[in-house]
Amino acid sequence: MSNEHAIVMSGIRPTGFLHLGNYFGAMRNYVKLQDQYTCFFMVADLHALTTHPDTKELKNNVHRVLAENIACGIDPDKAALYCQSHVRETSELYLYLNMLAYLGELEKTTTFKEKARMQPDNVNAGLLTYPVLQTADIILHRATWVPVGKDQEQHLEMARNFVNRFNHRYGEVFPAPMAYNFGEDLVKVPSLDGTGKMSKSENQLATLYLADSDDLIRKKVMKAKTDGGPTSPNSLKPDYIENIFQLMRLVSSMDVIHHYELAFNDCTIRYGDMKKQLAEDMVRFIAPIRGKAESIRTNETYLKEIMEKGADKARESAAATMKLVREAMGLQY
Ligand code: TYM
Image 1 (tube, protein in one colour):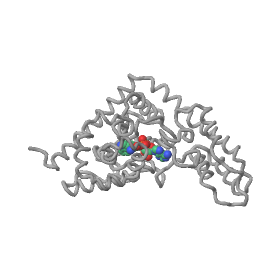
Image 2 (spheres, rainbow, N blue to C red):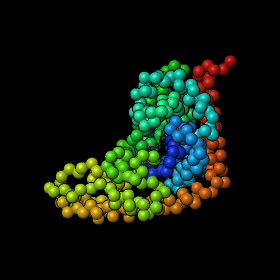
Image 3 (cartoon, rainbow, N blue to C red):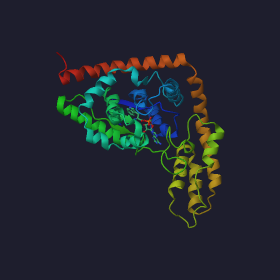
């Protein structure tokens, strides 16, 4: 990342338990970025309403996401950690951006099509304009770097389109936001059953959550799909086997990974042993995060304090941007 004054922004929806995909796609990068850049990390409670209109669990889920972010290493003294609905400027900018977003492009968005298929009785306008709200979150701080997983790539592309349209019509107010990962490509953490990605609400038995108990982690890993092993040397790995290797690359040591790569190539691999090793490495990775998150989650006073401090920082940055936006748009009479 070149610009030392770069602004970083990202968010996570409070729609369930956070998992390994959220960690390796997003939070790991948050932690690395917070030391060098001005960072805004938010719990996207407004976005959650597009799919979870029942708000009974919302408070618990907001607390959980905050606690898990802190347990993963976010330092609320360095980064602004806040809740989306506490920054009302978001809704104002969302409204203006909606006039620059076209029905055709919104309907073509992959996440919209997926969600419309999953909840045919609730294809609400918020679902359609989800990428517009996400753009508002990001550009409200004039952020340029957005640490996210691979599944958010299209939303970032749309954000750049909305920014270009705004700047073209009203003058240069916003820099173009880019999806960011510390490695090369954006990350997609696969599910354990080889059928897709880890997810907060779908495919829960094939997803490793940061709150899973040691036994549950072991059970889920041992159930991952394998086969009888390769029959000829140096063969291509089937997708579900490549997924297990990919998960191992996230949490296991180089020696362990190397050992199983060699064993695969010379056809001596025993998937039972490999999964046992992976399960233990996962337990070693997840258990300390789970422990920390549990103790933070129950400390409501502390979480409230963090949220208020984060919202203050976010509101200050948002107010400065909105002043420029209203000036640029000529909304001053
Ligand atoms: P959400 O809540 O679905 O996911 C939060 C973050 O986790 C990443 N992620 C993954 N990365 C790799 N592999 C996976 N299996 C995996 N599953 C999830 C996501 O890419 C994301 O980075 N729309 C966003 C929330 C949002 C936002 C924003 C993000 C709202 N406003 C502004 C960035 C900037 C979402 O639904 O993320």
